[in-house]
Length: 206
Length: 206
Image 1 (cartoon, each protein chain N blue to C red):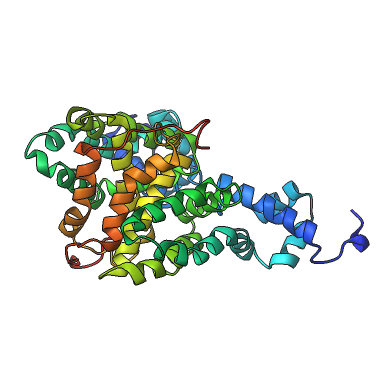
Image 2 (cartoon, rainbow over the protein chains, first blue to last red):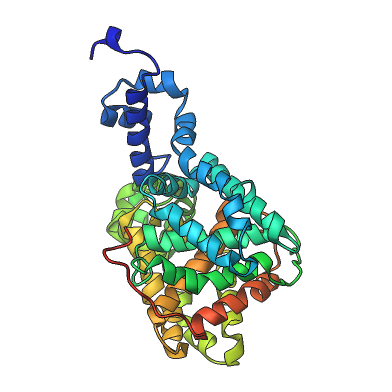
């Protein structure tokens, strides 16, 4: 590669690095993916990755941005419309995120990494506490929006894991609208229904 | 260490290796934990681990046996009793597994490993398809027991992840009986309720 011919920030190279990183993070998780491996697979020098992104952590956040942007933009879709189909809209939105070819590797990467890497866990924690769906729940829920967001999020993450990581059948191949019909009423209750008051047990759960 | 003084299969050493392995697998997952690291932490020669267990894979299965045994034994507890509180019994059982000090590291180990290691994923897949709760659902469900087991399992795994890996509040510190009251009706419906028929979408979900 001719060093002089490469402009820093050249979009095609940057995009190739991002696409490669997204794929490797999705496959192996954050911990097991080195900058060196991403550079090799993308056919660039590792120093270029540091030049563009600063750190592996920053690269991870950059390539995971797509689903985060979707989550940020979800609030109106989730809030507006028939109040009785809120649950269905949440499930439909969650399934669509995972079925979109550009989002799925990023979500897989976050999920795979969150279980072993504290920084990725922090990102996943953020999804549960600070994104469009959480704000939607804050507007829709009669009480305890944070608890409700966690119930909704943990159910949808568990489903995604069963479908896209474990790939257990018949769930993995079930038609999305079937899952909307099955899980929608659960999410409807978690978002808008009456829930028993939460008692915290003494000490933390861990 | 005096090699001649050690009897192969000596229970205390074997147990120390298992306890150490359980801890490291739980913390780092299967992939990132080497036999060498387990041996060092347990203060034994790596060859002794191979002698006792054969392979890292076999050691992993050995130390994960405890929650598997609990799952195997769960069927009568889940099936017998008031049919209207089936959901509550499932949630209570799931929470108890995670709250038991001896089971939690093993479950964390399976969960952490399943996302990156195919053999561990196969183990988690087995939990969804071949254990006591699945047989309980086969006896209780009016139809589609496998799908119902996957819905129940994925919801409870998602909850455990939120509580014990991400530790998001207020869910992480919520009293178990509060969670039983909130999630029980969902699981009741997934096990015994009327569900829409499942349409498979053309091709696989991946």
